[in-house]
Length: 181
Image 1 (cartoon, rainbow, N blue to C red):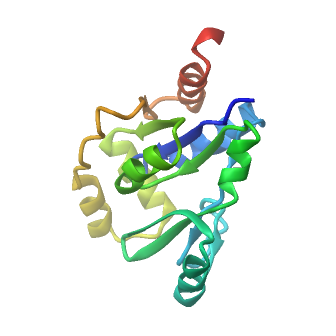
Image 2 (cartoon, rainbow, N blue to C red):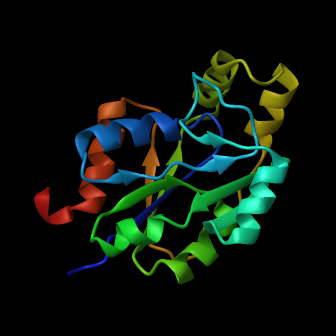
């Protein structure tokens, strides 16, 4: 039996990562969508995640409850250790990760494939404004932020999500199963 692949989804705020992930999960229900644990209040309009306090996160970390964990933007993020069992079943799993944790994920999960979701600055700014979580200055700062390049050692598919969602999902599906195209 083959181990499942870990599909890491990365990209800047407003690129539409959660939307692409939801559509990809609908197109491929066999892909397990990993729910992150985050030290932020839940948002019914945003990604599905488990909201926990700093104290709860620290306790789980001490217990070894996370396969991966990191800090970004003043928050703590964790990927449940149960991910290992899903991959051992031969099931592919998809998760929104930070670029900073990709080298660790590549070592921990040999079948790592990265979808780098991007979109034009105008579209990202519009999406961030519609989301309503940031001020115009915060949005401008996010748009101006330049992400470090991804390591050449990673298996990466770049997806421009400025067009239709269908095009983005088709590009993801083609990258996952090139022989099906």
